Image (tube, rainbow, N blue to C red):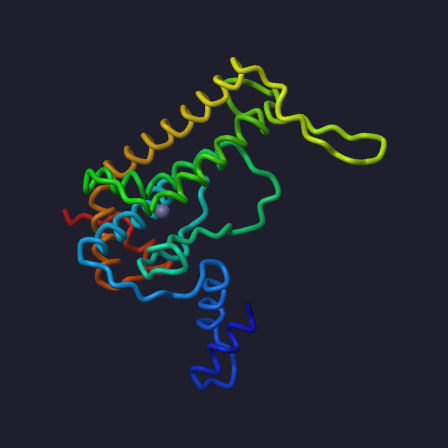
Amino acid sequence: MLNEAAILAARGARKAINMEDVEEAATKVKLGPEKKRLQTKEERRMTAYHEAGHAVVSYNLPQMDPVHRVSIVSRGLAMGYTMIPPKKDRYTETQSHLLETIVALLGGRAAEQLIFNEFTGGAASDIDQATRIARRMVVDFGMSKLGPTYLGPQIETTEYGRNFIQPTEVSPEMQAKVDAEIKRIADESYQQALEILKKNKRKLDLVAEKLVEQETIDGDEFQKLMKPKISKK
Ligand code: ZN
């Protein structure tokens, strides 16, 4: 990462790496380089609402870490991105934080539905990630109505120390219940994201408009946008 930062500093004819170089290098390593894509006005607006959806939903969830940056500058495969890095290292995951992470991941799709009544393919990786977390909650962590039973494939250790995985010892009936639980978690989380955005529609508009205008909003500016306006009496 510092290598990337050094390249950026050299490109800018600076003798030392500054914080902006580090920030850009970290983002580049994580999400890929910035990509100039020709997007129509309408596409930009949809990307802006999608990312604003993640950010506004996340802001309204108590367990989520603060939004660090929201952007509609394409990177790698993503049309835009919302960064919510952990404030401190998390050694244990809690049920409430996992659930809120799913809600925040589905905030992009929820914004698309609320504003455009239309879906983009850009939510594919959000949906994939949200489903993975929900599956782990049900199958591995015993964090669902199915209780504290491990519902994944069984891993056996032989005397030679080799593991082999039995495809599954879960009955088809139980498997159907697992699938239904994953779907329930996803559906309820999506509804929660929609509710948050409906309640905070003005903030959603505000953040999306700012994104269309200036492409990137950093954490401090985002926090300011989200603060309730002091009403004059
Ligand atoms: Zn997204």
